[in-house]
Image (tube, rainbow, N blue to C red):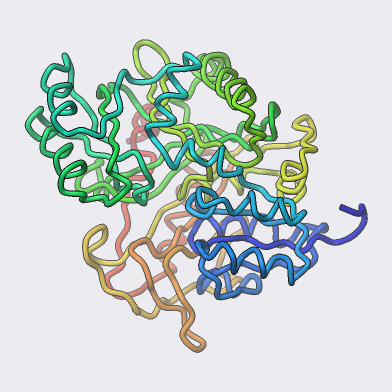
Length: 433
């Protein structure tokens, strides 16, 4: 890019992750034009939106070319797995997000499992299967509990944690023979069920250089006390104290180092977010999964903790110019509470008008993130199961949580609900719950 010239930026996606990205970069002095495709109701109040689906690769590429965009930031994993970054880079447009050969880390759990084995990266023992009978034999002979994973992308729903061997066999049959996840479940991974506490490690990667954002912890279950069905995420906080300096040292040495070296050995010039889900076991940290984009809602607590110009970081990584020593991260805390539609994660209603606080009612260090909303005239209405993310930051975790929950009280729509115990494990460790 020409130094001194404002950047025209296109953000791809339309959920809470993308709204957090928009908010993180919209006030950058480097920014020229900012557009999000397809965006959502809240994003449309922060920047231009273009009604192009994230999976419309041709549409996105043509729009980026015609609009003379300097940088494209891809939020979701699906367009990356379809080769969006490859196409854009082929047109000379810088992209934050890996090429298709890097996106396969998330698009194929079978590939990532083989990658972990090849480069001796700690993870659960397991095998890949396309044949149900062989999978069934393996499950029945396994000396421990197992987890069944659809290999392909399944919108975060392709993992089954069965309570018994019988349930595990049933899950394998449903994926391999009944096609409950379509092509995504034509190959499955059967692996040992790891015991421990999960956490999320989010890296912003530029080849062999990276920024490690504060460790975070998501809350997947829909109900307080981690009860009920799994969801896309009901809230998160960072930093997570369960990821101690000792754990971080273990992760850097035994997971991050070999992973980046493995990507280089595979000829993958990785530029974008690498999300490493870890399980902290009695034998050390082990990889649960790789994702090739920011977690949602983890993104909504991590980006507010970046004190440097976030757009400069995205742009430097996209252009292979990252200097990690220049990046400053807050030593404070952030928490997000996800407000959902009644019935989620099952069937839920859409179209409920949302009452939102005015800008003057949103305290400093707080964000209202739109995930499942759309504009109808001058109104914002619900359009998804996870509707809003209410984020608070502060010098302490309790201050961040108080700010997020106070924001929840200023928002309302018919049937709205949210968890009231975000960070409960952390608070218990602190003696506050």
